[in-house]
Length: 68
Image (cartoon, rainbow, N blue to C red; front, side, top):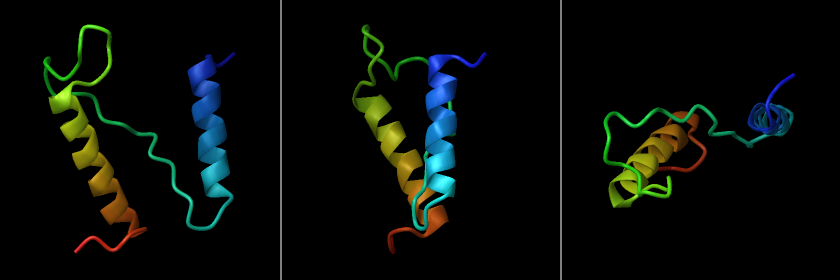
């Protein structure tokens, strides 16, 4: 039986596949080294920058928004 997170990710993926111009950014890369998270597990400034860079790369690859 899948975990709650696996279930949600599967549903979001299915949702995006069945709708035009809808994408799911689910394959989030691991942080390359320690120092991207606060003590409570949320991203710090460096973590947010890493997320933003990967999200921009994803948007450019999908060409969902012109990013010249």
